[in-house]
Amino acid sequence: MTLPRLVGGTPGGILLICDHASNAIPAGIDLGIPSTLLDKHIAIDLGSAAVTEALAGTLAAPAFLATVSRLVIDLNRPVDSPGLIPATSDGHAIPGNLTADRGERIARFHAPYHRALASTIAAHRPILLAAIHSFTPQLESVGGPERPWEIGILSNRDRRAAEIALPLLEKQGLVTGDNEPYSGRLLNATLNRHGEGTGIASLSIEIRNDLIADAQAVARWTAILGPILSEIRNRLASNRIFTT
Image 1 (cartoon, rainbow, N blue to C red):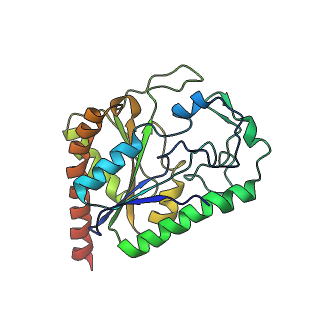
Image 2: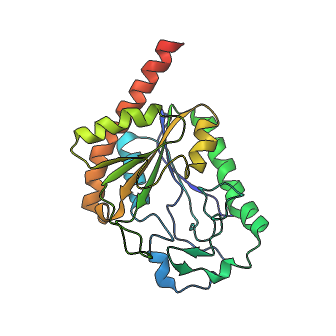
């Protein structure tokens, strides 16, 4: 069993989640790929862990980070998803996954991750779940089209947090996508389960990974997103008080 990391912070209304924080391949698993692929986006959301931990420090908020590569199992997929244990990713074959024991991978990684996240949410009772991800400027396998967005906000049916976030980001002059570069109606499993499934407001923040490639860039985005997440939390809290 490979358990996630919980980084500091105290209950203050926000819980940060980073499903794709790690490119680690646990003992006993051979994906049959060159190690160079582990430095690509197919293995890890590049820059996402650094942003998540920086935001945790700025907001004094708890952050929940995965410790296994999504090439082993994608923690942001439902267990019946064809992409849960990918045989290919962005044009790269993952031959070791062709004979993987699906049930064993779920029991070893996916189920403990989501049990631990549910326990963390129950302990911290957040007003807002904010998942931090990153995306590539363009898909490697098809060579395009280029993705113009600097940041995207993903959401499914619960739009409470997204509707606050989008104008705040646009006010910063950022090229902002609403359910771009892909839709939260399709890829939102963690927040569907732990946010919408429990009535907690949530959003997924997707930052283009070339914009968070070093410490200075991470600091810039932390300075942008910290106040915005605080504003979302405060408005959600006010609305909750007003409506109860």
